[in-house]
Amino acid sequence: MKINIAFNEKIPDYNETLKKVEQELDRYNVEYRSFDIANLQDFGDFTIVLGGDGTILRAARFYSDFHIPVLGINMGRLGFLSHPDDVQEIITSVIKGKYYIEDRLMLYSGIYLALNDFVIKGCNQSRSSKFYLEINDNVVCNYIADGIIISTPTGSTAYGLSAGGPVLYPTLDSIVIVPICPHTLNARPLVVPMTEKIAIKTSDMLLSVSIDGYDTIKCIDKITIEASEKKAKLAFLDNRKFYSTLRKSLHWGIPPKNIV
Image (tube, rainbow, N blue to C red; front, side, top):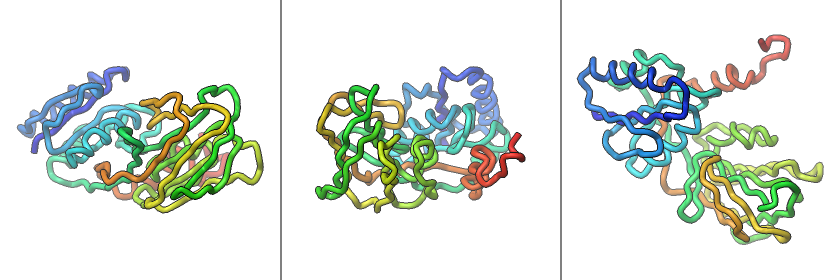
């Protein structure tokens, strides 16, 4: 096994965890190379990522081109896509093949690929805009809102959840459409099949689009979004991680008096 190590040098104390990972891999005589998240390379057949969920999103998109699994060691806040910082256990499990891989749906628009979401707002983000939603070239509805989120199931626990969208199990083949702060009480999120072609346009200004909170498309009049044929390959040690993370990180179903 050859392993890529991807790290985010903007995260405090990343170097200490990186050193631990390299020492463990040296102990198993595993060949590896380490890359900053801004300079990823295709080297190994497995990738370990040190960082938060944003770092893992970037690595997973990059390595999806090479069908390489990505496993995260959490150095961020929530850690929906990663594991706690138990380096010895993680490296031992990876070397012994004690992990499983989930293929995660991604979305694309032109050259842009998203594992979490496309967030669409007006170029003048200080006020609401009128957005028109089309699915398969058919007009569905319009929203007066601060924006629209087009999300994968993986992204349903991110911005879409904060905006009132549903939580989807991450391996479902579905797309979530969530209006942001709609100026009406009857605007609700939609969950549609991954086969649908979604388009958003606006009548009163140009659009600004954020992809996974990283890349940005500015000043366009329409965006079309579809499911990508590429799948991100995320590796996990525990097949119950999604439900346990919902409970531990988001306090899902825990009475307020029990939240510390």
